[in-house]
Image 1 (cartoon, rainbow over the protein chains, first blue to last red):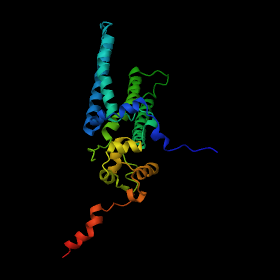
Image 2 (image 1 turned 180 degrees about the vertical axis):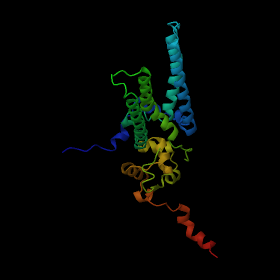
Image 3 (image 1 turned 120 degrees about the vertical axis):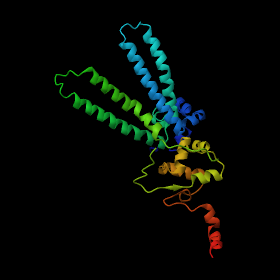
Image 4 (image 1 turned 90 degrees about the horizontal axis):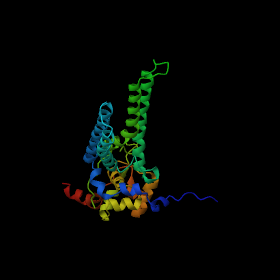
Length: 175
Length: 94
């Protein structure tokens, strides 16, 4: 006789490192709506700074070679911190594996990924329409760059930012 | 977070906040007992999220109450009204 999975098993299953990290009570103030939205804006600014900085270094023909790793570290550091804060502000919903999420978190994650995939799909469709004339297979680099940016931001960035802006706030504990 | 079908489903009312406050249980303690995120308890209490049947049963089991004592498809009558409502109402009657 086969036994069905015990639904109570998950309640006693040990949680992974990331799940325990994101459940740290020290992140609770960061999970307020205003803080989440601030983290989202800061992460966008850090991303723009990273891209602009690296772009400027790469586009500068006389740039000394040592400047590239120095700029990368200097710009990646605020980007990494801002991204970490943003992920913590939404409880790591887009970072944790499915078994580590509860049903409400899974529903929220699925909702934002559905929209993100839709936007990415529209972007790819737009790319195909825009490059339809290039029948010989040659596509301008700028178009490829735009496609890459759309896919990157729609799939990787948009879900967590959408969560940061749309998750409901939770008031103080009454007990 | 969008509730579980808020616009196309009738609302599900619950007494989780009242029961939790009545028993002096923190949101985090209840969340740990139910194996959900503490914010999910807040979403449940405010009706921002409607639980699955499995989670609803876990909540009822935790409080040791039948489902109809915790969840309802119509608003619960306030406890004060249930206990004193009719008497107060009667006194106010001219």
